[in-house]
Length: 330
Image (cartoon, rainbow, N blue to C red; front, side, top):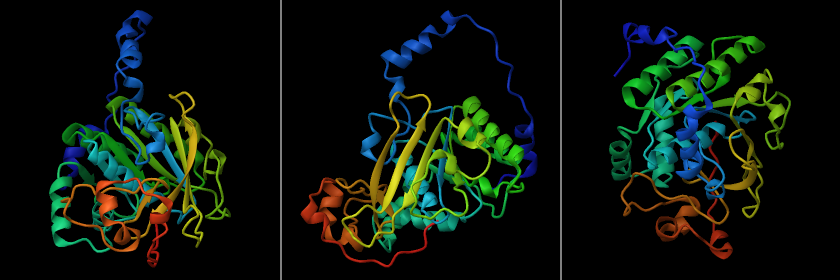
């Protein structure tokens, strides 16, 4: 369903109530929930088990996902949305760089673990994702007010809990407008907090860096307020190493404001058949498709049953890979 301008008008108005001054005792129950009810580790898990007991994409927070152009940030973000859907969270993708058709075509591959998803796998994924994944259908750029309005509308009407904004560079502002960038980041952070959603903002690293370089949070292009305002910062880089036993990518959670010692970095492999990143000791699993729909192509063609029923694999099995031509990654 398309959203016309009249339906968006109420969401363009700033209606956030002013915060009240309250006694510390008013927050006792919330703090008890934080410590006693496991709230500290509530939220959306990342696709990688190394972070299961370290970190969550929690409501009311903003995460910046940064990396060099072409490193595969959008591919990783797509996998994060898919993973959130498997956990029962509804997501919204606001991408000015890729059409919904292109995004969903990639999701079919990621979900089915197939280079060319079968008709059954695709239709089953369509049924599974119908009320879980939503896409803003517009190309080019979007102004910050419309961006916030779309998020507000989607949270109120569709129950969205995870929002992907891909990317900061598609906002309708000059690339050197640092005050404009700061305003967008602040607006997204405030939106996340007021609506109880988690927002992932894709940001590019500075020009001149190599796609294989390890980054730090100062590598993000634009104003320092991008990473300063964010609750979490994830840096992502590719290695493009031809050796199948070497890592294909590097994932670095370098900032996690509300967690103790959550900062952690891991190496990842990339299954070119399914376009999924995975940890060295664990293959990705099919999502939203029938179990009898077997993976095919690439590494999954060698490990069909293992991928579906036993994600743990040994080094000897993992070395049996089939070369697949790498597509262009966004």
